[in-house]
Image 1 (cartoon, rainbow, N blue to C red):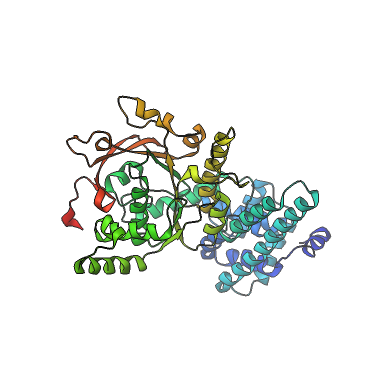
Image 2: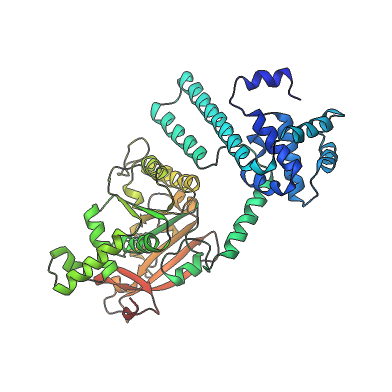
Amino acid sequence: MPTETDELLLRQMPYAMDAEHAVLGSMLIDPRCVPEVIEKLRPEDFYLRQNQEIFETIYSMFNYSLTIDPVTILEQMRHNGYYHEGQSWEYLYQLMDTTPTAANVGDYIEILQDKALLRRVAEVAGELLVSIQQGTVSGQDILTVAEQRIYALRQGRASRGLIPISQVIIDVYSRLEELSAQDSAIPGLSTGLRDLDRAISGLNNSDLILLAARPGMGKTSMALNILLDAGKRSGKKVAFFSLEMSREQLALRLISSECYIDNKKLVTGKLSDDDWESVAAAADSLNRSTILVDDDSSVTVADINAKCRRVDNLGLVVIDYLQLMQSAGGKSGSRGENRQQIVSDISRSLKIMAKELNVPVLCLSQLSRANESRQDKRPMLSDLRESGAIEQDADIVLFLYREGYYNRESDNPNLAECIIAKNRHGETGTVELQWTPEFTTFTDMERRREEY
């Protein structure tokens, strides 16, 4: 039974004692309710410690597929050190007696979730107030922390401290079941390039994927190819942040890739009647896609993060490109003695953003001129400009290389290599792609123009 101390605490924070009793009572009355409750609640969603202990006991028993009833629960509580002679037995039966019906357990859960959310919001507000009163943090930093914490609450990923591995394993099992049930052969978001998908297992949530190359190799084109495919086929919204091109230029590039009209025609407007029909069809297809674009050239990682938090059903973030970004303090990637630290901070912030948003973040990056002086001009990890931290933070590093760029007499000047220099999900290697310059498009080698 609640103590005087518990009653005092209840007056300080939002709670729903009747709902806590009803949820636990429903699981005791009808064990068929247990999976639904386990799926939607965690021990910390209960306010009273005694209720948390009972739920933790049922939770662990469910994990081990043990029989759940008052007798077995009491025995397990005794084993866990939660048992209080006489009081625990009386409390369990009181929970069953005061629960009207287990049929309404879904409603009880919703009440409990709402009160738990209010408590977490109050905790965040309290922590922010303490930081403000201490006067050691800037207003911009407070705002960033506030946005991050509120977004985490909205996504149901509130900071809960150390988590038992048993809870993590349940999440892993759920993910494995989801993967085994889906038709796709890859776990992540498709790039639209089948060979590349197979090599990197697609673009996976919370991953920072770096696509780097020397200027003119087609970094932006490949990023737009991936964006276009994801925006049309994934069923999720995809966001493109361009620090170099305007929205209109981006739209023209996307139209060219979608309808296979020479990009030069689109730039000059010299279009035939058939071309206009193709453009109209491409525009209609793009209108039905879920692509979002932003061409703010002074954007920071914090700005991107804040904008993406407001997008429901976000599936992918693409940024073109890293060296043009500004640091949180408003410093750009201009030349200077702190440039390496600035780029390092940006790359680390991008990885944190990918993890927080729980979506793949594809970031483009330039390479240094180091490869130009080598006989074999294929890029290496050491060619990444400004900072080794970029290599460290990225989960996957992809390089684009075209022999035809350096050697016009190459046997296949439009053969492109996507070099997988780093891959936390598998092996490194090289994937050959076909580059079609007039449409600024990359395709799989075996695919032909007639397939489109």
